[in-house]
Image 1 (cartoon, rainbow, N blue to C red):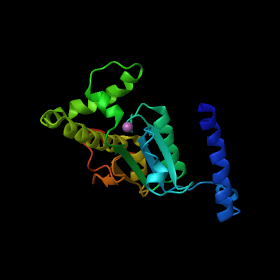
Image 2: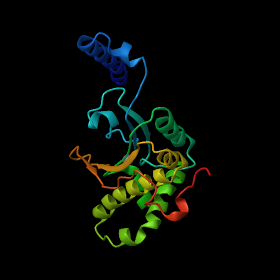
Image 3: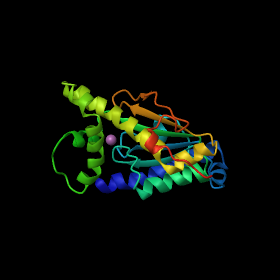
Length: 214
Ligand code: CO
């Protein structure tokens, strides 16, 4: 059974290639020439939130970084490297941080259960809770508090993106770069733009605003 499932993955790949080539015999030849995606997606690793699929994007259209609870942690070399390459080499115009309702990472951050090494990753999310605990603690309905925490976490990650030297440097150089926060609803398939769209560092607390050059 398991073996059959595993084999189906390779079979599915062959079918996919065949379909693509039927539509365009040069499809893969053209893709192999290079990429110029206009979007960087920072999303959750959750298997139910497939970046390309839910926005109808084709291969070559979205540069993707995913981790547990779509976190932007400024000491994470993986995230920073993806961000640097996306902004400075690929010159993406939009960065979307997409969280989702029902996120296991957020749920874990609301609880106290020790899970393992992941506790240390989850701790970043707990820090977000601490910043907003007044608002969150005031929500008595557990589900509503969970949903709001998902939204607040996205917002915080968008701010953390804006605080990076990479993003601020791009803005300083008048590079066209917009950052957005979205929430995806697994139960409906719909995304919601949380309306926290940045394209300069003016909205950051003064202490985070970097000054470049001269
Ligand atoms: Co998640």
